Amino acid sequence: MAVVTGTRGCPDALAPGDEADAEENPVVDPIDPTATGFLLAENRNMPMHVGGLQLFEKPEGAGRGYVREMYEQMRDVDQIAPLFLKHPHRSARTAGQLVWQPDEAFDIEHHVRHSALPRPGRIRELLELCSRLHSTRLAWERPLWEAHVIEGLRDGRVAMYTKTHHALVDGVSAMRLLASVLSTDPDERDMPAPWAMRPRPPRAEPTDDGGASLADVSAATVRTALAIASEAAGMPAALIRTLNKSVRNETSALSLYAPRTILNQSITGSRRFAAQDWPVERLRAVGKATGTTINDVVLAMVSGAMRTYLAELDALPETTLVSMVPVGLNAKQSQLASGDGGNAVGSVMVQLGTHLPDPADRLAAIHRSMLDGKQSLSAMTPAQILAMSALGQAPAILGPILRMQGIVRPPYNLIVSNVPGPRTTHYWNGARLVGTYPLSIPINGMALNITCTSYDGKMCFGLTGCRRTVPRLQVLLQYLDDELEALERAAGV
Image 1: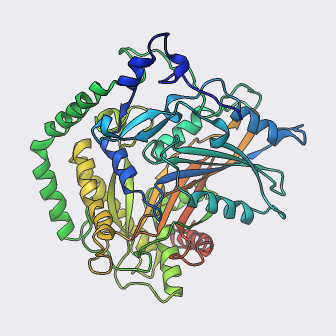
Image 2: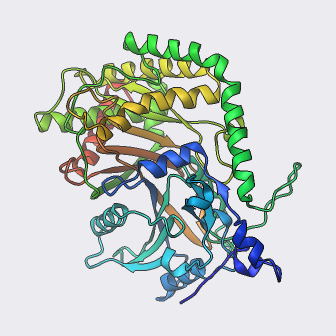
Image 3: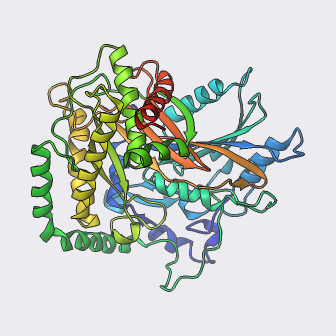
């Protein structure tokens, strides 16, 4: 068994005689409030990890053992980056506070695995494997991530499925991490694994030793509290604006008018995953012809697909579905984001126009709703956006906890995200990346999550749903394709 350790808080990094000091004052990192929320919200039916499926074409001349060699390259790294060594921990010694603690017995073979598909090795078998892998929780006793190098696709491509707890990274951070280990040069052969330790460029400000003593935890908490307090004067005005727009049924961080649908039920931990991509140029052409954005067109595709899907199940509500759309914030602007990985996400509640029969009308309604939401956010600071977004999320979290599902309206019906990725062809040690598809988090009462990633001229959709609550999830791919064609006809392109 290969055991690889990093230098952060591991026994090998201690000088002689320091062991006792380390035991009394372990190296820990405080966990920021957003990450703490993701950890505490997790349960058996609601694993809180995000994932990704990447498809690679083998380089020319690759032999029969290429996939094994690719796996070994990713497994046999000299040092693991600190982000991938830490796991959550709390005890009496931490005063019950959740902290990050380094895994001193890190086992790389538990986290990086080599798998193979059963015959006939279709995409169907690959998506079924990803669905099963995405259904299992990550144990807090180990660092919260896994990677699976997968062979057996009949077309010869290689797949890699990864999952990482949302407390470590959000979707934007995950895409940046992936891009950081890819190259635009097909001949480059020294690209590291995403979890490998890499030298950081020099910074102007001093760096710490990668950890904090237990005494520093309380100091960090005070600093976070002061950062929140500095925004307090503006919170009431932001809250009043948000509530006013919500009462008027306008787009903001809070929704009061989402209808009940079959998606808004208690979920199980079992997942189903579907994925497909479309040329970005097709979406851009619709947007250009209609004066809308690519993101508007993505939401319009989802709107039309959901309208068809729910109508076939005789479950289409008379009023419009509402989607929660995450909005990434600049982590440098927000003192609430964690430094390594972390999360800096706000949200708006977008009306999808699913009650409108015409695709052009749905697109126009979505465009107006998104403009409304952007105007609401533009008047807030990053901390205010986080606070208002937390307010908008509260009903989704508190409803299941208080067992009030079916009594109160859901705050929104589904989640739709759009995460930008690399615009050009990228490679990992000669293997060409041909597709990247995100897997995300359905939550209790919100059984479907649709996340898109742009890459190399394609918009890659990943649909993650509760296997029991969202029947025949894969048919949504056909409905998305049908809706894009309908939008093209309506736009005259």
